[in-house]
Image (tube, rainbow, N blue to C red; front, side, top):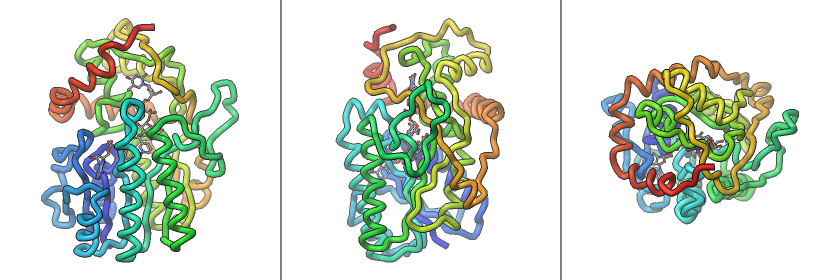
Amino acid sequence: MTIIVTGGAGFIGSNFIFYMLKTHPDYRIICIDKLTYAGNLSTLKPVMDNPNFRFVKADICDREAIYKLFEEEKPDIVVNFAAESHVDRSIEDPEIFLRTNILGTQVLMDACRKYGITRYHQVSTDEVYGDLPLDRPDLFFTEDTPIHTSSPYSSSKAGADLLVMAYYRTYGLPVTISRCSNNYGPYHFPEKLIPLMIANALADKPLPVYGEGLNVRDWLYVEDHCRAIDMIIHNGRVGEVYNVGGHNEMRNIDIVKLICKELGKPESLIVHVEDRKGHDMRYAIDPTKIHNELGWLPETKFADGIKKTIKWYLENKEWWETIISGEYQQYYEKMYGNRAEV
Ligand code: NAD
Ligand code: DAU
């Protein structure tokens, strides 16, 4: 079995590669990654010498490079993680989001049609459903919830999802889509909430909470997401969407306070800053379908997962300190330098 994993030098893609090489030691995994600011080759160091692993630096929008690789490797399955993934960056500059997330998906699916595969899996997000109100805790996203996006990022992911379903209906491409809630765990890029707060707290820097911090996200330990995708690509029904989430809703402010507590840092580091434009209020996944059809359930409880994650950041300072010492500094200054306190 040969699997192409795109975006494997990023957060979830790298965790998926580790998971797959461990769980299916006889599989061959080919990682395609453009190595954007979010992709780090050092992340893949633990598997670089594995004879069943190959890394290829390529842009999923580069049709020639992608076709050449499919010709060489004749993959059975393609799992597409490659994306521009940060909502705040999409608000600053949407164009690259449309290019990578939509056109890149098209190129990959065209390659799948041309060379033949048994499964194309699109890694999507719960953000395609928009948000839920805080005063309706009875509401959850199901696979039938209408697409109703808020940001350029989520719109680009929704555009890709629609295209994936069109390739299924029009060309009969054997596709599946997973829509997962917020992941956390090792190798999470430090521009995202949890790793950013850990890194800032360790440096006794302000912890910038957008608005009042009452927004709710449904957090899932990254390995649980990887296991869900493994189940879907093997046993999921073609042409179906599977929501992935573990009923673990938390307010941003409570996450940040918890990180302070775990690190022994004072809550006085918390600063409330100008809100994200179009900020989604609440995400909450109903995972009934993947549970009933595939038997998936999350294994890591948040209380344990967040401890493991913090421990990982403490033990792997070199990984994230290298990232935040480079180009990231300009990003941080641009996004947070002039952000008014509220
Ligand atoms: P990430 O930003 O950490 O990693 C993205 C990876 O894709 C990077 O390695 C980057 O170099 C690579 N990449 C970007 N553009 C590329 C291109 N044109 N060609 C090839 N490679 C390219 O993202 P992540 O958080 O690991 O998310 C992975 C996927 O999962 C995304 O599709 C995202 O929409 C989805 N998702 C993420 C979450 C989450 O909580 N992080 C939740 C649900 C779904
Ligand atoms: O729900 C799945 C999505 O989760 C994925 O599709 C995205 O790729 C992923 O980035 C994530 O999106 P969010 O916007 O939810 O994640 P982020 O970590 O950027 O923000 C989480 C919450 O924390 C959100 O309500 C905004 C808030 N926040 C974030 C940052 C970076 C802050 O309050 N302060 C911050 O500095």
